[in-house]
Length: 217
Length: 217
DNA sequence: GTCTATAATCAGATAGAC
DNA sequence: GTCTATCTGATTATAGAC
Image (cartoon, rainbow over all chains, first blue to last red):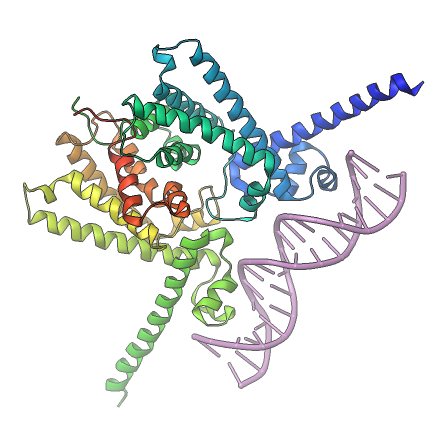
């Protein structure tokens, strides 16, 4: 009777496939964080996953698709984090945790922690084939829109609450926060080995939100 | 009589050579700013300079040397700018222009202007063969030391004057300023075409020095 | 020193057996 | 779907004539 076994079989195979692809995107994500898209080779990915390069190409049609899948996964993680934060803050209306600025700070801190842990995939700074692929990827763009909308609303709210400089266009604030995901200051400070990860995060957070100039208030 | 003509001849040839190499580094500098080291091909450089690729390799032994020469030239330009600033401020002791913070701001603004003009060569964010070559290049490292020393002294002075946040290690401030040379926020804002170059610079300057958070003082 | 032509290498992608 | 072996194209670098 195939009516019973077939669906189960299919589901099992699908699970194996999904697991394999998750292992792949995890490796890609790590390599993308470590060396970036250009320096990452498909051979390396295959070696790290432990399968042949040709097998990779059964799952993904190109190096760009490979990287896209990893970026989409990372974007989904970001979405999950933001939604969690959103849900938490709804339960603490009026309290400090509910303040928009604090949500922005928590997000930025999370980003820096991810980066220091070597788990933040980095986009090429210049235009490249990967950029084009990402812009053509619905799941990625949807995720990006989602994240940007939520962060954007927090930025506007924080400006209303007088916590974020009101003269700055929200888009500029958004970009400034996004830029923390690829801030070279983090790597430089890490390389200097003079500070702990926590200290590095605190310094970058401070320069980002408080600025370099001393405050008198 | 070779005693008269020879030196002149030699000097002329040397001048031609220097001019040619200046044309080369200028092209490399532009391409480095536009697409970065990895995406820049030696063929492109040759095409833009208007000579054969093999001729390039008579002047420079590798792609890395080519890029190094351009980076050294850019570094020298920076040195010249800083020294000019230093000399100017010596003549206006006690005045606003002589304040260390203002020199740091002027330097940052100059960096952003260069970047917006497409004349700021960008290093690969991750380790690469170029990094190794630069670290092995005496003229580059000498220039970097020079620039860092001068900026470092201004940072310390600005902290003494109470203008820069005193809790920040000077090295963190230095890195934060260096990072403006490859700040993706500049490109993102430029691409959005919502703001003029001046506005972009003002926004980046503001977030860098004043921070995102509103100031009450 | 400049050129044309070519070598050498590396990395993305594919063929075809199993 | 996975493998080994191979193709293809791009790119760095060089040989050798002038």
